[in-house]
Image 1 (cartoon, rainbow, N blue to C red):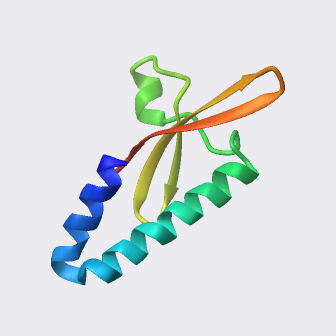
Image 2: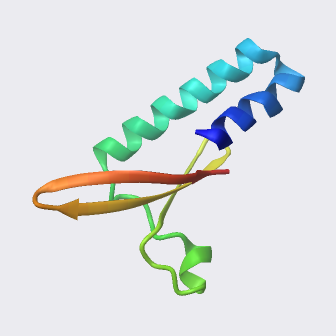
Amino acid sequence: QQSLEDQVEHLAVTQGFSSAAQRIDTLIDAIQDKLLSTPSGYPVSPQLSELGVLHYRELNTDGYRIFYEVMDSDGITDIVVLLVL
């Protein structure tokens, strides 16, 4: 949540608050659509895998890198977004 709010503030300097907020809302919608349809469809983060961290995946969209984890338990799939850069 905080990194998204920070991104709105960062973009607002050049794009205005309304435009920045709309861009981030669109980004959130795209992330949800992509991850809900194919949560395991994106690769393990190449940079993190070089460090031996293999359980975080990376989605690249609209110039942002989204790091997330897919957790399956008892037939329920949880998707946890960790970082949006």
